[in-house]
Length: 513
Image (cartoon, rainbow, N blue to C red; front, top):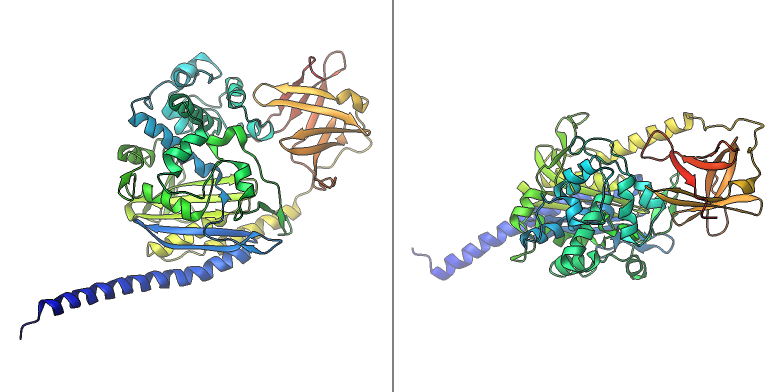
């Protein structure tokens, strides 16, 4: 008996439909189990909220919000909620240079100082050696110097980049990997110079608009005023979720000022797992995509440790490269006041995962990304949530055992407090202005008002003051050590910062009060 063509056609549709249903069911099974894991993460990690999106090929196969974008008013996180993505912005900035290279306006082997006249390094040897690729792969030999832009911020990019010439290298060029945000500011400024448009305009026109990232922006005020924007939070030592202020990255924008949603970031991931294309249109050149996700510099040895199938730490162009349980992974995290992020993709598996949170210095993006990757890659799931929870408990126990630095009793400042007032400058960082009023010393670090509490001798403990005038009860990790010149006058402040083991010195500026 012969089957009719119509019957054969209907049979093929049925089989195809059944395959699609089975595939959908497998995905539903994967994500029904991941839902329970992510709900546990929300609770166990004491996080305000987070959103996640998963891309497979050209499709978003999962997106969901957890927790609150506004804890006090119980406003939930949605897949359109805006978060600051911090340094996950770097791949966007580097991509602008990939586009300029395609246009023939520059090469990655061009000397950096030739591309940006405002940029100068510590010595002529560095000026002659450092090429654009070195900026993109963090291999200039300059360590972070982050407090320079974080505490002494300005919207004037020329002013910020001028500090680089005073930054002493910690290693020779290409000898050792050092993360340095200033090098991504420089790239953004190079893009501005060769395009005739601001970095913000370039990001919008070259990437946001063609990628239909309609929710994304680079402006702190636009971010704050959005009706579905996440508020920034931090976690106190007692696991209390505390709202903090937004941080305006301002002039340092090219290093990390993009604000986005997981729905928008899913489109960005599609470009990277589809050879630079989005909806059939080239957004980034394929040869740039390949280069950016390939190793350009060794970050560290990063041998297998607790997890024998996780190793390798290299850097590409705006991306970190690793080996995750037998799969090639490309990712970049982001942290800024009140927000943490992770954007990751597995190019061989055509899989992308983005996790955005409104809590700073959080492990949640890593936990969520790894938990989803395990299931999507058909690996035996690790208990990433439990592992981080156990580590946090161990650290909390250790912190209780540690004793605070205690002041030497019965000491006092060597001078009347008014003698400590004045302006103190370090060319790599900026100027600290110390004011004497109401029988106390005050200054400003970043956007924070600070009171200097006497600790012992000529050492003062800087404590932040909130908008209600309340002084932070916690001892600072950054002490101000005042010193005198040969005439006995207060001449310098030595401040211990993250960049060095020895203090950074700020000299009194006699021309300023």
